[in-house]
Image 1: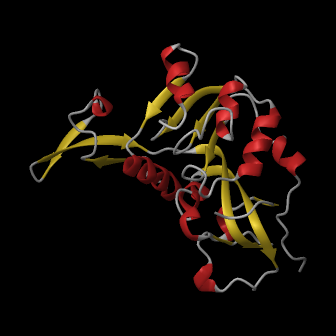
Image 2: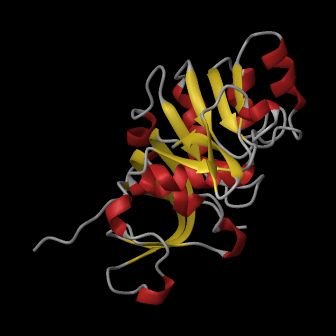
Image 3: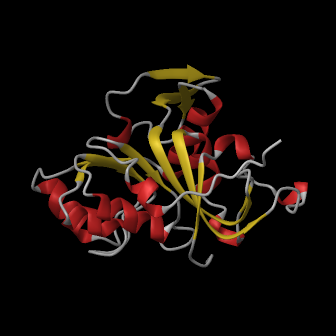
Length: 222
């Protein structure tokens, strides 16, 4: 049987992005961010993108370049304080921004990967973020209904992979990356090191190969 090999060129990755794509991007600030894949996304020129990420980095850097390039239609995330251009663009009506509490954000992505369309959470009840959402009471406490968050493409960062696409993450890079790997139609992982099948100990595999469609070698984990 021919061994599985999911290695992709950056050019093949670039062709995946289309006008209006919903793209998840892993990382928390610079930790665990797939910087080379973000550069490919920026260079693709794809417009009207919805980017689903914890934050949008800093002005003009990484995901922040997408905003300056005019490639964004909307953002779904939790923390944009590092990039004041997000608030400026939202207030000017250039982009739409959906703020999601960080725990809800993580759970909504996990739910998408598990095939769960929606779930109830007490977070945001009684606040602006919970306005106009369905409310139910459980054991005397009010909860709001949150829908899952899914994407067309997920760009994630891992430390090691085998050619089948099994992934292990380095320290804090094990943040949104494993969740996003499950929640997109296509998942591309940027990895530091690629080994042959069977070289990753089972206990070190954080994302099974079934969720990974392509691998790109590059960058250093941090």
